[in-house]
Length: 215
Image (cartoon, rainbow, N blue to C red):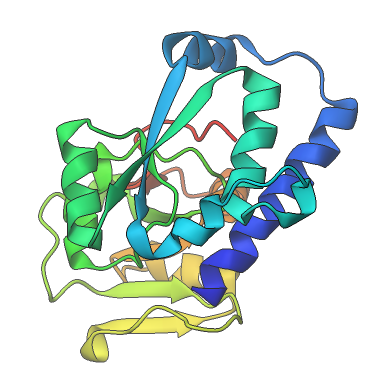
């Protein structure tokens, strides 16, 4: 949880900073906002304190503070849909009951199977980088998967010899290009940076981001 909390705590700072100089939303963002006046998100029951309301902003839960700032910027209404397991959250996503999971589970083969159904909206969430010639249509326990090591607590668990971790993003991208691995898990914005800088046009975001993240 520490690993995710550091990501989510950075988001309000990004939004506050952006609101100071950013111009109007672009057309794609306006279209998405207009089409989603109410946004439902999945959240595990154990994280209820993070949605704590308080008349004093400094005492509100971190998720509540984040969503309040987003609501101020977009005028959307954010409604929680509670769950008691990560699997239930994936089912909510698949059924269209929620638009995103605010506390996404660690990426695993089970999560990858639901990946293309996700409408996650945060750039800080992990995305899956693959090659268009090797799209993960049927992930299995034998997939050669690599994780970008954020250097934080509670890193994703590895599954046998097929999974590796490294803090050297460029080396991981190179391993993907050379087919030493089949997929790479890393923050979406970082992934997009390396994809845009790469001379290999076969790389793309797969799974968790079937469309461009909103924020």
